Image 1 (tube, rainbow, N blue to C red):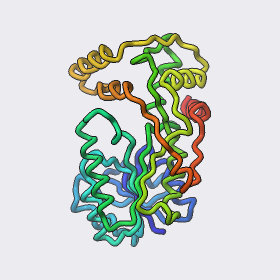
Image 2: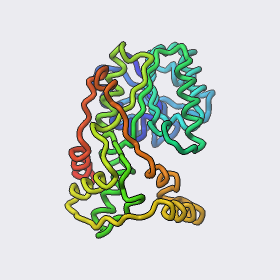
Image 3: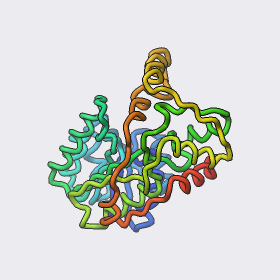
Image 4: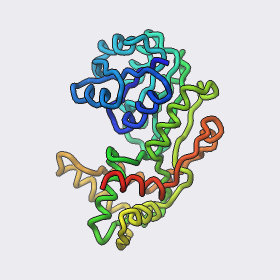
Length: 289
């Protein structure tokens, strides 16, 4: 098919675009800047000028090259969903795959949660042959800002704080496994009007995640349990004094809830077989060191 990608210059786009091309699709990608255009061009896609914050630019971008399908990798947390869906419908793009997030299940109530849920409602009410995939925390490769940061910290630090004792569950998904699933969705009719949670094969405690990441970099740091409440309070203060905080209180608060998900529907419909975290984190360290 002729596939149009939004968010193609980002971390996930770096894995999805090459797979779309390898599957035989012709790919155009929305690019809002020269650097974004250069990035998607390097990945093998044809950049098309457009910006989700400038709705008037989307119609020509979505129609470029006679696009037949949309792969939306851009975040649904910024209120663009209604414009994206409407533009796709008007441009005649019947098939669409949207990337949401398992963060919609959080027991917390950040402003982005309501926006993301509304976005999913908009997609599901549309005339598109849609599929929604909800990844957990994505990791793997040089562009990963989550585990990459942890790996570098583990390499140099003799001790690591464990908010809440590290007892809550995590289930990170490798970017390449997620990309494979997204491309598979496009070619399987069974995925139309379906939603899939995409995570690693097994949930792990935060303690296990940090332990396996430490093994990957050849370290055995001391793990120091830290009460979650004071850690969150300290992070809120840090956010107030920092112009560009590297971690936010909401991220710590989410460590107080389990993030474990059922991937059986993806296994059934997508032949989804994600790699273990132990395998994936070793591969990431080899790629970034």
